[in-house]
Image (cartoon, rainbow, N blue to C red; front, side, top):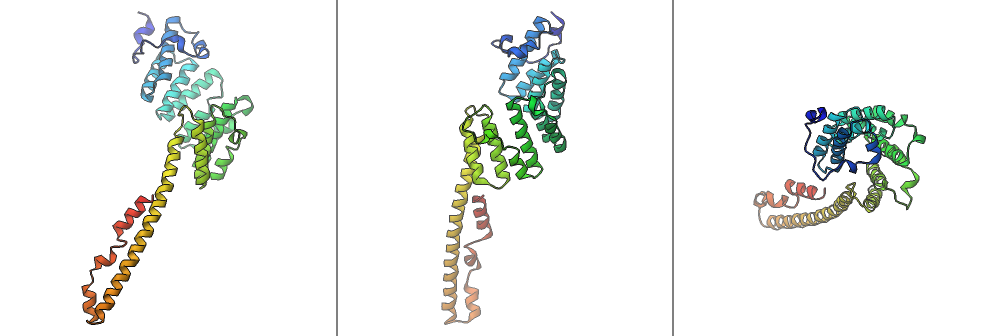
Length: 294
């Protein structure tokens, strides 16, 4: 048994997962490791990438990190897994390490998003600003824009959030792998700006572009449509309740007038049930109407 096998304490990797399934560029970063160790780390990385459960993915990534913490791709995988589970500070530390080891700036969007999740908006914006955009591929540039828009929303700057996403691809008919995320972010920014109708159209575009279900655009679209339908129903219910109240008040008034025509006014007032007068818009009924129209 080799030394690394004695140290190995991670979860069992399914037999069908092989080291050859790892991306060639990532595999190349493992060349500094002994072959058997490289294979073991590669299988953990593949398993981490394939796991649907974020916690399971995190466990595989941690096992790889335990074996090869000085390899950039391993720290990157650890950062991604930590990010997926909401371990923002840990993810940020892993991406920083990966960036030092690889010299790559394409970690900046997710690093900025981690700072944003930690509530450190100034630091998040500083990371966005320090990027040399000319050296980044288009997908990383778009991701930086998406994160910046989210930061601006958190700062309460709705117009700035929209401005950050004003790129040619926003109105282009040509779709890209990241189009769904761009449209989705724009829809969120429109909602924050109080432009619900335009946001619905943007969510519809995001849902149409999201063939792989990367976002919940379809659910958000249904939610917006549902809210509009319920508001309409609530309005109709309110009108019916108002009409009912008017009828009851009129009827009650007529009853009082008829009674006072032959009897003393005080006796007529005592004969009216207060609950009948309030039946049209009792507080609990009003609460129900408000709840249904939410």
